[in-house]
Structure formats: C-alpha cells, structure tokens
Amino acid sequence: MTTTTKAPQPDLLVREPGPQELDPARTHRRRRTLEISLAVAVPAVLLLLWQLAAVQGWIDDRIYPAPQTILEDGVERAAAGELWPDVWATLKRVLAGYAVGTVSGYALGLLMGSLSLVRAALEPLLDALYVVPKLALLPIFLNMFGLGEGPQIALVAATVFFFVWISTMAAVLAVPTGHRDAGQVFGATPWQMFRHVLLPASLPAVLVGARIAAGVAVLVIVASESIAADEGLGHLIFDSRALFQNDIMFVGIVCVAVLGVLFSELVRLVGRLLTPWAPRDHGRGQS
Image (cartoon, rainbow, N blue to C red; front, side, top):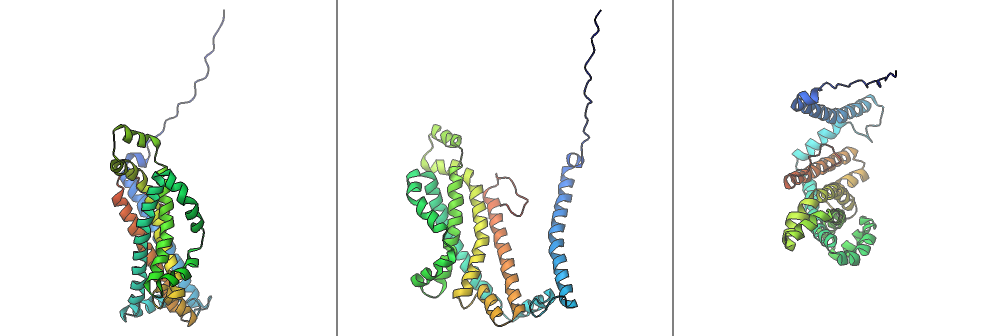
C-alpha cells in the first residue's frame, strides 16, 4: 500500500487596498501639497540662514548682503524706474533670439529627420559648429551686425537653434516605423504624414529641447550683456560688481533667476497646451 503526500501549499498573500486605491484624488492632493511645501520650505530656510548669518556677522555683509537688504534695494530701484529698462532690454533680446532660433532649429531638424540625404550633407558641419562655445561667436556677430541689439539676438538665436535642432531631428528619427508605414498604407500625402504622424509623435520630445533652450538662452544673454552691452541684467550685474555695489549685483541675479523660471514655465505651459495627449510631468527636470 502506497501513500501519497501532498506538497505544502504556499501561503496565500492578501493585499489590502491602500489609501491610493481607496481615495486616489485625496492621495494626489496630499502628495501635491507636500511637493509644494517642500519647494517653498527649502528656499525659505536657506534665505533665513543667509539672513541670520549676515545679521550675526558670520559672513561679510559687504560682500554677501542680507536678503532683506537685497529686497529693499530691489524695491527701491523698481519704484524709481531704474530696474525696468535693464529687465526689458534682457527680455526683448531673449524673446527675439528664442523665436528665431526655435523656428529655424525646428524647420531644419524636421527636414534632416525626414530626408536622409539632407542629414548626411549637413549633420557633420552642424555637429562641428555645435561644439564651438557660443560666446566665441560674439566677435563674429559684432563684426556682422555692429554694436546694438543684433549681436545679442543672434547669439541667443544660435544657442537656441542647436538645442531645438538636435531634439527635433532625434524626435523625428525616433518615430516608430510602424507609424510611418500606417500613414503610407492609408495613402497619406506628405503634409498629412507630417500633420497626423510626425508632428504628434515627435512634438513632446521637441518641447523638451525647447524648454532646455529657454533656460540656456537666459544664461547666454547675461554673459553676452556683460561683454558687449550698455544695458540689460547682465550689464547691471557685472557693472555693479566692478563698482563694488554687491547689493545691486544680487538684485540683478535675483531678476535673472525670476526671469529664467518664468520663461521656462511659460514654455512648459505652452507645451502642455500643444500636446494634451502627452503624459503630464510633475518633475522640475522634465517638460
């Protein structure tokens, strides 16, 4: 007589639904509140420590003025109308250069991503130009356009162009072959292929490059204004430094930071409006 033994049955794991499953809306609100609180608390704590260090004499407030002093000087200059000409000069240069660089970069990136012969002809040359520091082109633009707004706008446009061109070309090349084949099977014209296949598939990645370019454009214009401009936030920062007006220098730095954040967030908002089908991002490093 043989006896059979049953193999031990594994324990059954039962998972209770958590708060995220039971009340996803409330969980999302709590998560969002926590993220906003951290985003506000970290800079606030750093500013408080800075203020305390300046008041207690832990740092030289002649070199690192207290945040309160910077705020008071900024408000005073803004009320007197001395700050806005520099802000407007920087803003109009960034907007003009960004528009030119974005349009040209997107057009050429789309063309090179779609046509292999154009890509083979132009990519080596553009790759070589891309690695050239853009500030090194400022003397060339000064020779071409002379003093004034032209060199500043051209430098921003050249910087933005490469970021948008690279992201656009890479995004078009990354469009799955199945998408293209489906368009061809349905007899799509070149315009329909662009409108209904290439554009929706590539635009989210293109906007990532556009948002990165927005921040870099602000950096470049500040450096350019410090070299070849008589107004603008870059000129204000470096001129104040030369005159040992460190409080005014920090006012300019704060204005640049605010301008960069607002411009970057504007590009992010435009991207959300243009690509409602793309996943919503919740991180600062995405677009």
